[in-house]
Image 1 (cartoon, helix red, strand yellow):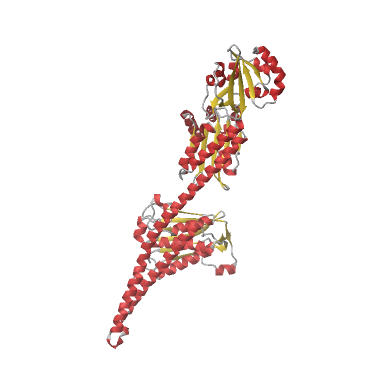
Image 2 (cartoon, rainbow, N blue to C red; image 1 turned 180 degrees about the vertical axis):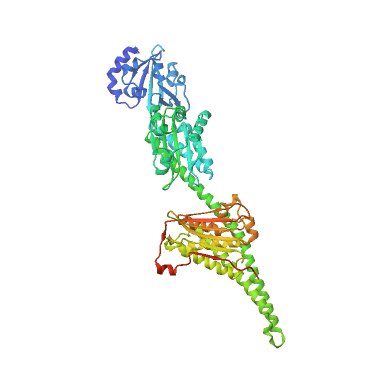
Amino acid sequence: MSLSPDALVAAAGGVDAVLASVGEGISIQDPSGALIYANPAALRLMGVDTLEELLALPIGEVVSRFELFDADGQPFSVADLPSRAALRGEHPQPRLLGFRVKATGDEHFALVGAEPVIGSDGRLVYVVNTFGDSTDQHQTERSMRFLAEAGAVLSQSLDYEETLHNVAQLAVPVLADWCIIDVVDADGALQRVGIHHNDPDKLALAEELQRRFPPDPNASIGVSATLRTGRSVLIEEISDEQLRSSPDAQAHGPEYVDLMLALGLHSVIIAPLMAGDRVLGVLTLVSAESKRRYGPRDLSIAELLGVRAGLAVQNSELYRRAEQAVQLRDRFLQVAAHELLTPVTIVRGYAQSLQRAIDRSLAAENDERGSLDPARLRRAAEQLDRATERLTHLISDLLDVTRLQQGSLEPVPAPMSLSRLVASTFEGVRVQQDEGRYASDVRLTLDLPDAGEVTGTWDETRIEQVVYNMLDNALKYSSGGEIAVRVWLEGDEARLSITDEGLGIEADQLEAIFDPLHRTREANLRAAGMGMGLAVCREIVKRHGGWINAASRGPGLGATFTVGLPGAQLTVTGDEASEQAPPRSASAALPEPG
């Protein structure tokens, strides 16, 4: 004989002690669908404290406290619950379902089953529902599945912007309602490479917020802080009052607050994109309309995703560098082959010419060795000297390319006087001009501080290379006019400038001329070279913590190259040192030819 619902409840009181120890939730409904019993585990899952409280609630009100979704995160209809089928006398298969508590955003997963109990008369007496809590297991499986899918996406392409954008799409709605990924670009600024939300209107709001109120780089919390520190941030719950009283709200005013409120933020995770100890970007996961509350488990998943994404960015960087290195190598080999061929041809040509002259002299009667023309020999020797000098410069460029690629241009700093070094290099170049290496109609001037010498701790050999290269360029690309060399102190920074009245530089070439193997068309027409000098100069100065730039009013209007070196001071020398010091100012104006 079957029990009535009241009798069942009374009987349940006798076994409640047993059911209370059962980890699986158990509830019972009468044929009308009303709940008439639930053990403590079921009460916890349904968000009520006592059986009496549950029995006082209509079943519809109990269900309305939750958002139901299936194992894939898709909305699940109440009408499809196993209990509804069991109330119709069917024997449904258990379903894995998610329950999100609307009031708190907490999520639970349970394997929900229901079985009808049929009386001897064949009529439904009650339905027994079971809830096997599988929250931990399901979240772990879902997280591992997501990380596996994200790993596959990240490995599909070496274009990190594309892959991170795809990862942001993948994270919604599995991990978040919003997923935002920012990466540090070559200039050290944050570049947004991925943002996703299923609602296009919300995306437009986020873009407006980013445009009007970009992140404060010095903020103590948020994306910028995580970028600086590499530490993750978990904000389990964000209230409207928190948004209104935040430092950003105080700084930006009500328009900022309105935009933030419109986004409906509920919970946030900010995790760094890590590659080793480098922070390459930031991952932001946001819970909004789903009301999901993030916890430590979610933070761990976000951090793991951040590491994988960071490695993807690093691999992409390494691949791009490798590509650039291959391109640079191929380009370098082409330029080197062309540049080396010219002086080698000259050397070979003059060597063969001299050999023929010697052979003719030896074959002449009376062994007239003196028949060799001294002037011709001198010209040949000069050409051979110039060709071998050019070969020497090209070999030096070859070595510098290797050093650049291997990162072996590290300076060996020691105390030195920039004033003395520039004066010495200046005098050496002036002597070369006297000997005909450079155009004789270019006037050289040197301006050094009167009160002392600009000194600092730098690599003298490397800095000399920079000074000579800049002077050599100025003379090669000038014909007439003046080249002014100046050294001075700007705060604690040494400054060196070289201004010429030569070819000038197009505005769009002022940065490009520092790229390896880059030469402007005008430079190629004026003088031979491989285009490595300025690239090496910038690398040397950069490794000293300094800078170098070029300025020009345009083609034909000359150029100024300026170098800044940190850690400088003005050192005043005594009388004896003054006598040994190079002149504080000098100029060289050679007489006009003839």
